Image 1 (tube, protein in one colour):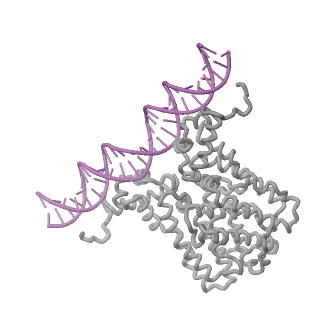
Image 2 (cartoon, protein in one colour):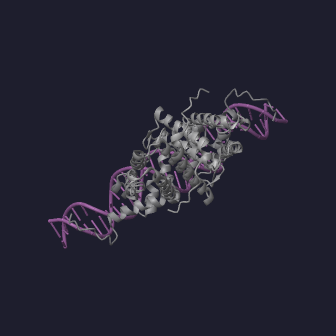
Image 3 (spheres, rainbow over the protein chains, first blue to last red):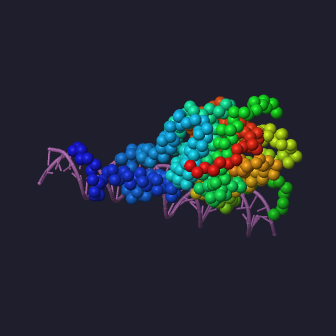
Length: 221
Length: 221
DNA sequence: CTATTTTGTCACCACTTGGTAACAAAAAAC
DNA sequence: GTTTTTTGTTACCAAGTGGTGACAAAATAG
């Protein structure tokens, strides 16, 4: 193998180019038809390539999916550029709010991310585990970073963040399929802003009120 | 048609009994194999009945699904027995907490409800709309009831409830498929209690802190 | 008892799915 | 040049899907 640096991908019969076609087809199919319809046949058809090549190049549909998620790298970037460990608590609140605003606009309309999340919920396939693993690793990283500098008294930070994130994920996924969720019209900008504002209020409450809450009452009712 | 009152369902060849077999099969299949595998063939097979009867009796798989959701009536009951409109605000907080505790234990392990929620998120089928419609109607009812008596200053009650509910739904669905969500071990009792406690803390904050929040800051960053 | 309607079964259709083996053609190695 | 490896295509498989029409058997009506 004569190691030509970056074989120019000029012509037909190009392995890397074909692999890329398949990876791209996964993304397109996710957006257009949803995670349900990502299968060997449909991906190959969408890519304009024979399905046998999926097995040859990726061993599996799972292999192709892993290549896809790793190449796209949806989850990493956010929150890596700011070093929160040096911030004073007063600015931490604003940083958190900014982060969530960015987080929000980053996935709310991102059909690929939302379909991957759905897929993670569906289960059944081993693909679900691959996605969960890929996303979970990065999420754990930034949760731990936040926990180091932010630990309001009596608040389970990790659980709180999971609950808020989960809520946002759920509403975003729901918005893709149905115009309204209960009384909120998620399809409109107003509806989306109601959710954003609510998250902001939630953060405000957590930062301002968490430290002087009444002691936990025992509920024997 | 000689109108025999409640035909005793004694023997083979009983229409109502067969319909019930099919409806029950839907529920069993949802729990065992998930919403993905609820189709004409599998339902008929699970019910031990020929699939032609689904078309004859319910016209559709959607028809069968509608009969199923209406008969099961998952969403109605909760919160209908307490008349919150007469409660003083001080007890409202405890009522809300109790409600969420009940709400929580009601769906967290209820495989049928969780699979219906998944189905609602998946979309594609018209079945998704049927489920969303059936659940949404009842959810809207109790949200409106709560809004009448509970309107903390500057809090969008409906959006707040949707966010919390969505978060709980998401985590519950996730727990069915994967042991952990990020750093929370949802498969254990401890993990579940962390979520429950967090919801309770959230409610405490909302009831105690919402009225004296700092005015909303303009974010020009 | 005979005739008709209802309930259930069977066989079939066209189509899609995941998966494989055999083969043609291009590219590279010799 | 010839051989060998790589890239792509074709054809096929068994199994499953949604859906329909023909038909047997039971239950009812006359």
